[in-house]
Structures are given as C-alpha cells and as structure tokens.
Image 1 (spheres, rainbow, N blue to C red):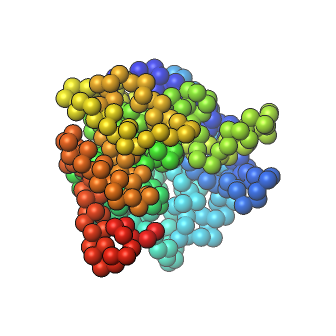
Image 2: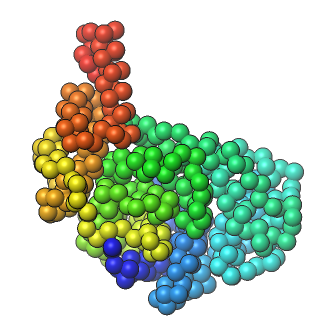
Image 3: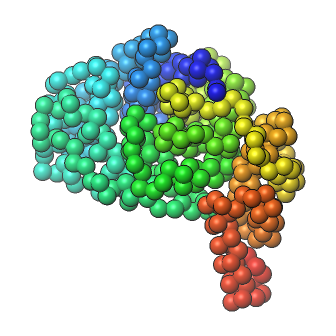
Amino acid sequence: MWSEADLARRLCLALDMAGRAVSLMAADGFTDPDDASLSIRPEKVVGETALLLLAAAPLMSNGDIRKRVDLVARRLEPYARAERVRARICLEPSLSLEHALAHICLSRLGYLDPGLDALLAASLEADGAGGCERLPHRQLEQEWMLRTWFPWANSTACAPRIDSRLPRRTALGRPTDLLSLRKDDAYAFTHALMYLTDLGGRRARPPRSGAILAAEADAVLASCLDEPDYDLGGEILLTWPYLQRRWSASANAGFAILASVEDRVGFLPSPGVSLKRANTLSGEERERYVLSRSYHTAFVMGLLCAAALSEGRRPSARIPARGAPRGAAAEFLALIGPINPKPDWRAYMEALPEAEQDAAAALLFNICLRRAASRRDLSALRAALLAGQRHGLLDAPAPRQAAQLLRRGARFADIFPSAGAAPPA
C-alpha cells in the first residue's frame, strides 16, 4: 500500500497552501495583471478552503493535520462570516446556501456562529428561497449542504428534503460520452459523487453499480492524464476511495503520476499555470500567480489524500502484475507512437517493469481510443480495438462506445461515400 505517512505529508502540503491562499486571496480574490479576464473570486477561495478542511477533519488524530486544520479554520472564519457574506444571505435567499457554504463547513468542524445560523434559517424560509433552477448535481449539493448544516439550524423548517430519485438524474445515473467528453459532464460526475458520499464519509448506493462507474472513471482518467488536466484527473481519482472500491491498475498509475508531478514541481499544477512564467516571478508576486492558477488543483490533491487515508482506501505503491496480458503495453505504446515532448504518463509507464506496464495496459488502451477518436481517425480506432481484443480488454465502456462509433461511421460512409469513413469534425 501507499505510505500512510506520505499521504499525510501531501495533505499537509495542501493545507499549508490553503493557509497561504486565504491570506493572499480571501479578502479580494486575484486578478491577473496581464489579463484582467483571468480572475479568482474571493468567495470561491473561501468555499473551497472550507471543503478541504471538512475533508481533512476525520484525520485530526494526526497532530500535524489537526494543527493545520485549526490554524486555517481560524484564519478563514472572518471571511466565511464577513458582513458581505451575511448581506448576500439576507438579500438572495435562493442562493443563501451557496453563500453560507464556508459557514456550514466551519459549523460542522465545531466553529459555531448562532447568529448567522438564525439569519440563514430566516432566508431559507423566505418565499423565494426555492426560486433558483439548478442542474441535478447542483440540486444534490443543496441537499448535502442542508444535511450538513441542519444540526445547527434551530429550525425544523430547514430540515433537508431528500429526493431519492435525484441521484439517478445526475451524471452518475447515465452513461458518460467517453469519446467526446465534455469537461462539464466530467465535473458533474465527480461533484455528484462528492455530495452523494458526503466527501467519502458515508457509504451510499449510487444509481448505477460501482463497477460501472469505476470503469467509466478509468476512461475519463486516461483523457485527463493525456491532456494533461491534473485538476479533473485528481477529482476522477476520488471515485475509488469515495465508492470504497479497490483501486484499478489505471487508478493506481494515475495517483502515482500525480504524486510524481507534485514532487517534481513542488505543487500539483493546473492546466492554466505556466511554469515558465512562474519562474520569471519572485516573492509574493510569484506566490499569488501560482496560488491563483493552481490552488484548486492542490486542494483536489488534498481531498484525494484525505480520502485515501481512510481505513482500507489507500492506493497501491506498485501495480499488481498477476494475470497481466503479456506484451499489451508495448503494442499500445507502438500504436500511440512517439510524442514530443514526452508526457508525464509516458515517462512513468516507461520507467515501470514490463509486467507492471502490461498490468496497466487498460490505461494505454483508453489513451489510444481517446487519441483516435479526437482525430476522427476511424482506422486508428479500429486498430486499437483489434489490439484490445487480442489482449482481452474489450469488456469496458470506452471500447464499447468505440465499436459503436465504428458502426456509425460505416453507416455514414454508406450515405455519403465521397466523405470517407469518418464524419467531418
């Protein structure tokens, strides 16, 4: 298993970054001086910091974690309960829970404010409190916030109204389009899982089997590692500890890749950060830039380590190689071909023993399918599927969707012969 001490160390790194983010951005947020369109709202920093603290709370028997949670919580409290927060709760009852997120998290941690509880309760009892239409995963978030806050509400009118059919209407309740994945859909998947499982703190029955959800997560993870998008990739990796499932070979590889990048860079970078630009800055200017671009990704790594530290949920330090399809990794790497510059996933895979590479062949297979589909190259898609068939890897959502795409491509070619096998982009 992955070292418990190392997971705790990484969580402490995220909590340290949270403390710096609160100090530098919780008051006024951040606006990039070179591009005013790139900005971070202070309430986003405050809310996401509170979520990280809540995820770390079950681990406060560890003195290093407890000390950091308490330090950041006390630093966060004035911003979570500032006058502007109270004003928004008062003026916008339909958004009052969103405005109160950090207050709700701090209350659950034991940092109470009965006066703000009374204001929030009054706002939720207003005629217009239910007037905001939300996507299903955002409705699930509302239920989760009410359930989290209700013990302090002092009002039975604020009791959470649980809709047992709601999880089925979220992204957890229907197959993900894995070959033309939209990030909004992937985030809807990860956020619904967070709220359904209470950040991994309760065993929940998802609307589809955990095995199917994890198989879809395997395919999404491959896309995230290939882009690379370590923000979304880290959230997708929460699937295994939140569903209390044994980590797949792809998930074990994915966690190791994110950990190696964090070790090399010093933090887990987001897709929007330019390390070249960061290296031209110094002091507080550099810290603000790095924090504004990567604090969320670092927090995701903290959430992931906190979830993995729960009993029985740690990833494996090595990829179990028993029963691996021999030669599969080499064939998929050949199909993918050379990539310049070499991505982190490839450097990691090539450093593994051959047996462990083969054990993680499903990750390479999904990358093959993703790359072929994104190029609209049905010939490459067919070659990848044939290789997957040879190695017994077809029983998964992404190859099934790839085979369906090939059949649709053939129908398209029958109707429009001059267009070739692939529909235009």
